[in-house]
Length: 416
Image 1 (tube, rainbow, N blue to C red):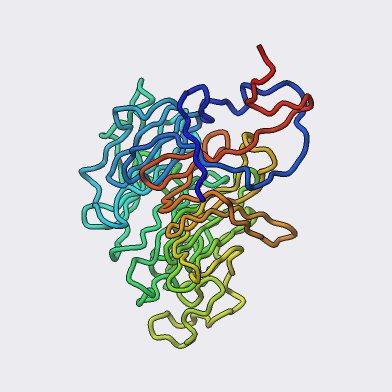
Image 2 (cartoon, helix red, strand yellow; image 1 turned 90 degrees about the vertical axis):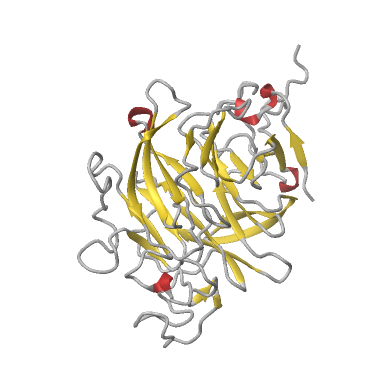
């Protein structure tokens, strides 16, 4: 069941509230836990087209990436009529192709740099850097674009998420290149970038090609294969990953083949190099049991080998679920008692789950809200979570903090 609430007035929109909760009553919040049945989806902006990514630039604006090639700004009241950036002429179109995400430099307020991931007109993934227009924070300079990387691809499973990690480096995930069952075992082939998480330093070579460098502590840094950019391997189609803003842990949702959908995990203390198993493993399911499979490079381990990092969360396809869309760990202040829950969902059924961890074990609870065809999540500057099914922007909401005098944050009852 989907429970939706429409945000009609800017004063009622969660985005319009500051991180200090403008309508809260002074006094310490009382501790408590949330009843997850109280969560709801607030409709913010209907009538959108092919929305695939939501992010912020260090302020309350939301930047909306549209697969067709435009980035638009939602300022809390409206989507601005002029696109922030329009790459339509550079972007290839198709089922998985297009502009897939945008990420703002940690020092964006100073340098104005941001980065985009798109597939070009021959379907190769491109990572490029642009700058905001001088004197206009709502408009990018289209002439400022430089290409950091172009990755030969094979027609599908682009991944496409860009995120800056807590270390200041730019992370991005590339899928295995498409075709079912990864017939060339690209995700395990250490000479290729497909099926990998990559990590680069965009503060090296800022003014000269290749407009980035490689962190020397990358796990495969050095002469020969694997490529220096590789941070972790063994992904099929990592459709959305995120860092926990509180502690830097990395959550990667990887779309499965026939059996399992999974969330992979990398703790903030990791030095990289994890192998998450595809195509040998699909979650904890043994997908390719032949250790001598000629598709895979020599030395590829067989099923359930200790060298593979298993998922922290997985679910099967037995009841119609078929394609995971990963989200964020909630670190906002709007929803009382929801801190630390990781939210994710299934594109096919619209189911949404909230997962929590206890002593290293993650447990998921099916929510009573749903969003069919969910394409992406986003996080606001205040840690609040946003969702989209491509055509509508939603905000995840729930009961606000209860203060010592009994009033809930945002509740003006009893006040004249």
